Length: 261
Image 1 (tube, one colour):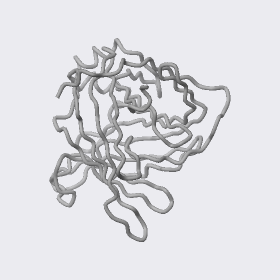
Image 2 (cartoon, rainbow, N blue to C red; image 1 turned 90 degrees about the vertical axis):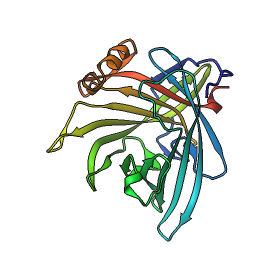
Image 3 (cartoon, rainbow, N blue to C red; image 1 turned 60 degrees about the horizontal axis):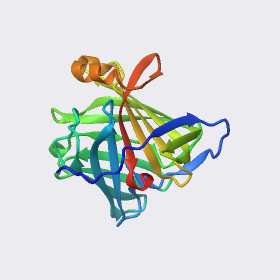
């Protein structure tokens, strides 16, 4: 489905403030979807280096049940429009994410998969193990793993290191937002035995003081030169950052619709 009535692609600028404006937040959403049910959230994606809209997503949270220790949620992520073909686009238009949140505000994303039965591992195409913290403080660090189901067992696919830093300013068009940045540095593991590869991506999430993600900025890492050389060569036209002596090129920005006014 092509959407023609779109807002202008915004100008986005990110810089570090000399002041620590706040150093702790409580996250109030799961992958851009509000934790409180019955609220939809629309997110627009900008693809680089072409600097055009790529897709529009609609997200919704549902609370499925609660026990004495955890509350369980699903997040429905539906692509409702495509404007430019993303070279790494999913074939599916509807994806389900399963979360649980415990009393200490630790959130675990159990599974990401296309339509199917969560109890049937054969239906799961991607698996993430937490914790992803819903309470974030300046200088927090943690590790998470992504697993895939192969040959009747879970196999390490990606290892992610996270760190949070406060004092960031995000400017979207003419509005500025004080934010905490959560950086996610991902390294894939492949082969027999499993060995770490070159870095795959860095995701940078920017949360405001109310715990809402106002921007997700996705950078692709050097392993893509091996995996998709033509794709990687095109990305050389995008701006880049350097972390851990590796270069990462900007590939996608995700901006909720409410920050595009």
